Image (cartoon, rainbow, N blue to C red; front, side, top):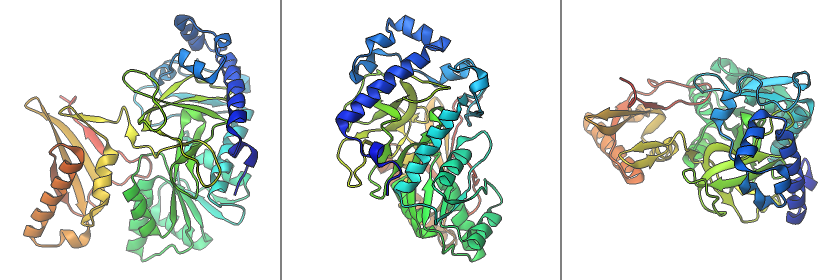
Amino acid sequence: MFWNRVMETIRPEELADLQLKRLKWTLRQAQEVGLYQRKFREAGVSPDDIRTLDDVEKLPFTYKSELRAGYPFGLFAVPLREIVRIHTTSGTTGKPTVVGYTCNDLENWSELIARNMTMIGLGEDDIFQNAVNYGLFTGGLGFHYGAEKIGMTVIPSATGNTRRQIEMIEDFGVTAIHCTPSYALHLAEVAESMGKTLDTLQTGIFGAEAWSENMRVELERRLDLKAYDSYGLSEMYGPGVAFECLERSGLHLWHDFYLAEIIDSETGERLAPGERGELVITPLTKEALPLIRYRTGDVTRLIDNECACGRGQKIEKITGRCDDMLVIRGINVFPSQIEHVLRSLPEVGEQFMVYVDRVKHLDEMAIEVEMTRAGFSGELKDLARIQKMIAGELQSALGIRTSVKLVEPGSLPRFEGKAKRVVDRRGVL
């Protein structure tokens, strides 16, 4: 199914012309912002120098720290009277990043969400439970308006009160749900404890945190639905940047709204399709907050092969973040790698926590792993065997030794929003 077939399947040569036209417009819009006036001047470049899409490499990067430094309204390209909504980013220290929206920005955003949901077969016959935060976090209102745009019946359940969430799924016959993957597993866990099967659920939309293919398998087994990955950033409206189609072989990045590059995060050099690196995005239609070559910090690669659905450019499922990457004794480790290993082991339960310490000037990583109830109730010798097996699997996958502690089911923290499974204590005195 298509929401906007013309743009979703636009021919490459037409797309290139459209992207260049919109890129030039974005550069003119960015010149209304003091930050970009300075950055363009320092880089010795002007919008007139951009004659092809490859010329985008002449432009300077934009960093999240620069957005924070513009708090609250220093990066807006339009007068405040044209700003009809404000969101802010979550999960940062100090001042948040402020994102403003014009009426056109909100219309474009709901268009993107409508494409995402239509692409996986959702429509006016579906009942949609939006179990994410409805405050300054962009996930709630972003999906809400997109779902209403295609005629879905929307239940704005927000987060928390898990038992009530389960009752709503049952009572209202919910067919599709949107939440973080970690909260979806918590829903499954509580539903099982209540003896509920949630038979009406068919589709799960999960995002806001990195999650592995093994976690997809677990979600689909526990909730008996099809799980789809959603990718977005508050700085790019919010959710809606890229989304899986029915093929689930990568996420379609909406090429008429975003110009994507993959770079080496250390050198800034652009990488070829198929090479994994940091995703850099230039939004092409944003009025209130234009951004040029924004460093997302997300690690992925461009997928160059054609998709059977007929849509265009895809990115690989996000494997982690450059700034969430742990360097343990010179080896790069992403939390998603740990999750991938643990989710593949039948003895492992719902949650895990990672602790990184510096012991006698050496980095040490310890992982607390919840067991399944059956596994935890076994003999001590069996627990020792499982602990050794898990440590071995992690060492094989990560290339470093880790200590593993097995803990009782239900003893580790649960998360309604983004899961915070890593505690790095190396800088704590």
